[in-house]
Length: 319
Image (cartoon, rainbow, N blue to C red):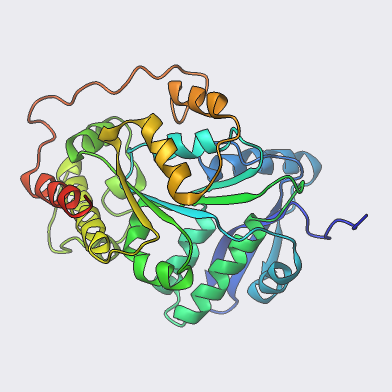
């Protein structure tokens, strides 16, 4: 019987940069903690709390160590990447996938975002370096921890569509699944509980492709509408490339169909479809709460013509 890798269950969770010391990675021992929460950051919090019961010390390494570790640990290559515009069923899709133990599901891992945006802190991090770090981090997150795993699904942050070209160059043969939804419905959801990209100042305007001269003041919905407009525009651009590994799905077509289409286009088998589809009856972020559907947005409150036009163009382009 093969001995476990010395770093089995150890995974890098985030990066830090200092102009003098350079880049370092923080590691966490997940032990037997499954990646079952709606967001990887929640899984990190649980694993970190358990580790603190054993030791308050944090484990750090330089990036060379991370690269070397990634070369030797048994892991799966990515099976599919999920892109989304937020509040469009992506979390429900990944939660449905976690009901099958053979699926490794990583949802919006902070370290992947930090690598893609590393040049914001350190312009010396170029395209090739980012690719090596990104793939190394995926190798470690996709490690076979109990050797029943056969698929590796990665849900990216919604603004990662703006990194599409480099991600497609890095993974030319991997299915990319793009999820969208009506902007007024997305905006209504953010009006109740905002994501990072829906709060001015948390993500750079240059990355989000919005006009840096506009002062939104306290109008968070107008800001979010402009962010969404650029997401839809980039989706439209990508759809026109007609890459055979790109698949587009809109939330209006139903969440059950979403799961079935995802399975079809990614070749990820549904071994227990009843259990998986049963998960769709519950809230994406609160597994014990029955989902009663989103209320219809108040008429006109969340309507922004520029945003809706971009969305309709996307639907037309992705037919």
